[in-house]
Image (cartoon, rainbow, N blue to C red; front, side, top):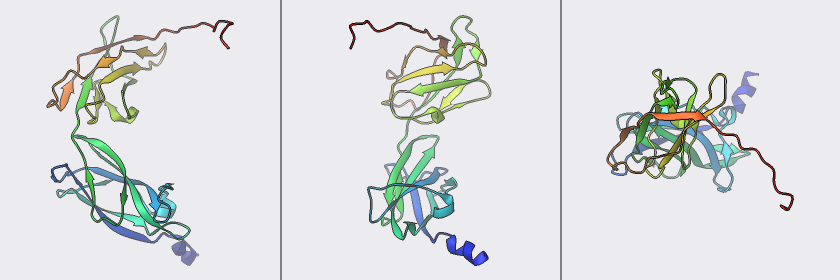
Length: 219
């Protein structure tokens, strides 16, 4: 039985990933996670990373030289060789990178650009009391809820994001009662050199429900 288990283990190879700024400065402490693969024969296909068949894909952190060694499977599936690795790279001071990288170029060079981090406090629009639970925020452009972290004191803090993402809205889901929303908040009038910006308190209030029906003449 042990021999069968070993025969099912993927054949793993190693490659160095180096994370740098556009000026070739190494970035220490970046989190690197492989999450997908493309075959050499079928670059248009994409396979999600399965630890059972592709090996472990735990988060790894770059050293002082911005480097980390990762392992990847020689074969993606059915003897189709790996051609590209999909990597997600994060660092609190830089914009996240999600990209495919050919394994023929070694080391794999991942460039990260600096972004801006935002901090904010949601307050009740009626009482001006801070809201410290169940607070979320969404930014214009690509991204998701995981771009923000709610601190113990109720401050909502973002990871570094691009300056082109210039609107946000705060949303609160109370334990009881309706959801609360802020008005859209414009971010685009801040000097570009500011990399860590504390926003003014942002008021939230219950959303408005609109009911109606289409006119009978509408096809």
